[in-house]
Length: 259
Image (tube, rainbow, N blue to C red):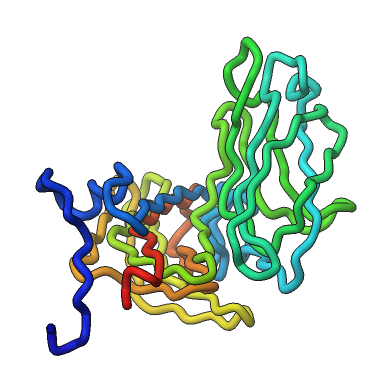
């Protein structure tokens, strides 16, 4: 037995592949890949990398959501997005998802109640093959926006992810980028954990410049426990960056695999 008590083998697979690959392919029980991609159209210090251009509005109570588009073509028989999938977590941080049929500029309410939103993606579309307008997911009654899928992209660019109950996220890769043209422009990005009570902890920070892609591979992995959220937050701006981008990649592990 190893000195730390870990005896579980992650794979009995005869194919020899790195664990991130086998996790992505579903070849290791209790392991799956997580990848989130974010964009900020108006960077600001203290804001997260998502389309909402603010610190992400995490909720403390599970709530119904509503979805609507800026275009009447995003509807059940339209040329744009016809159905969208919400993926998130319920009041107990357990996974929850559903597919909603769009109704253009008229809000459509979710069936489930969501404490966290981890994704918003197009499922079916008309002849345009993507969403015609910006699609907004928000709390019912024109409440706080939880995700925005910009026209033509088909998914919400949010570098925000909450770890489900009884799971652990091992972040393996962080990629922040800064939009702009001048050498005096830049963004400092912070690797940010948010606990279930919404307390914030910013650890590593990464300084970026326009046109210089910065990628950090975390060899040993950054551990994010169950019910914690992870974001990439802009902590400082230099000059006037035009956009902020960030992605996170990692392996989601069922905690039964760690005992």
